Length: 254
Image (cartoon, rainbow, N blue to C red):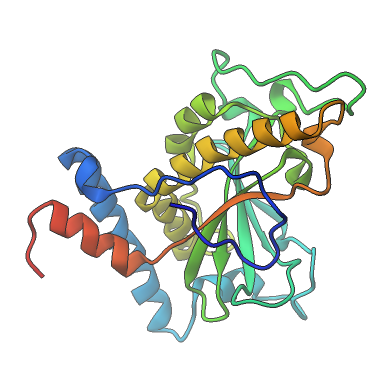
């Protein structure tokens, strides 16, 4: 199935995104994702009781919300797990208010996971402790609810390019559990990436397929720096719908 891409996407090669199916996951995987959903609900409940939401937590203390600025200032890092994220916006139109970019920094990447090499003539990619792997971006609406996930080309985030097999091993390493800028917001994002891990995995696999197809269609060009290829794939998400599918696959009645 090809998920419909938002208006900001460019023309992509015809690479299908195979949507995940809850019944194809193991019972243990479904249980872990349902536990993550409970964490998401706890965080949202705690915020809503104070009239807050996840996005508002990241923008508090700022005079406004400006395109391309990172929120909060200086990004969010977890020094133990070497995870990082920031929130920003640079889209016009559609339902998206802004989006998260999520990463694992070099010190959190096992030495056995090797990135690709930058093409000849390209700017050097971050390496060693400075390496950085972009996991996924999370689209949010104006009410602080997640509405989609998307993967992107290397130039968008200036990352070190790890192939899909390595990226899938990095996904469980993302976690931020400190209080800056908001404990519930950090726990919420950590849980969201666990809940939708199957969706993120297929987007990462699809990303590599799109990049390979784009390179084949544009020989002699550096695909990783091609501004015509920005978003490689997008999937709409709904916490409630995915939780319902997980419960049905587990045999849990509504």
